[in-house]
Length: 247
Image 1 (cartoon, rainbow, N blue to C red):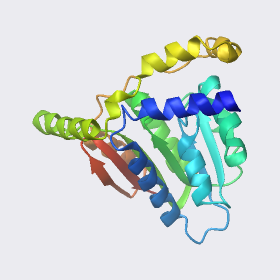
Image 2 (cartoon, rainbow, N blue to C red):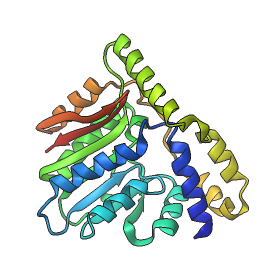
Image 3 (spheres, rainbow, N blue to C red):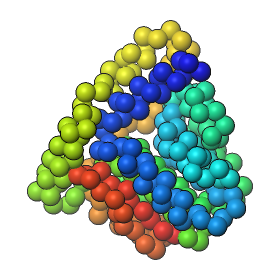
Image 4 (cartoon, rainbow, N blue to C red):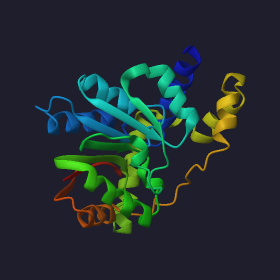
């Protein structure tokens, strides 16, 4: 548990480099889910691309009667989450978008919410289209998909401005003093306590980032196409958004 706590803390620090005002973004996602599931006795929420589970744990704290299913393709990150956060969520290994991926979650009723943060951008457009359709089919009436991610504007000039605003915010928050993604994985690779999990990880078909070119308008169009009635950004700083789609 001490090892997991150390590596989860380092993970959260390095993630500050990639999500402008990450803590506030996670808070906003939790606000949306808490608001849209109010009055439901046992909401069912899935966290897509959960990593070690910071968002899932935050949701469990806000919604103590909810069932939180945390999904990721990485066995090392999942085990860090299980060890550090305990029973806050049910952790499931699955590659989002692969055929049958939702069946692996063993959901026994319609979803009330699906959330994600800094994860869905790695999906290419055809895969993301399937994922949005899959989720729309599993969400009950009024259910929501809440995606916190860096999403570009359609106009190149606006994208440049939003990236600049986000970078300056990150600089003020000293986000770039934290280690980066490559440094975290290099350090993890040198920890003998993680050796078995890293060996297991090397046997998995982990996804690579393929969809970062898709704009905010592109995501919005795919969500409407999938069957979501209302889609819009409820929070933004620079190119960091919380995009909400209502079934």
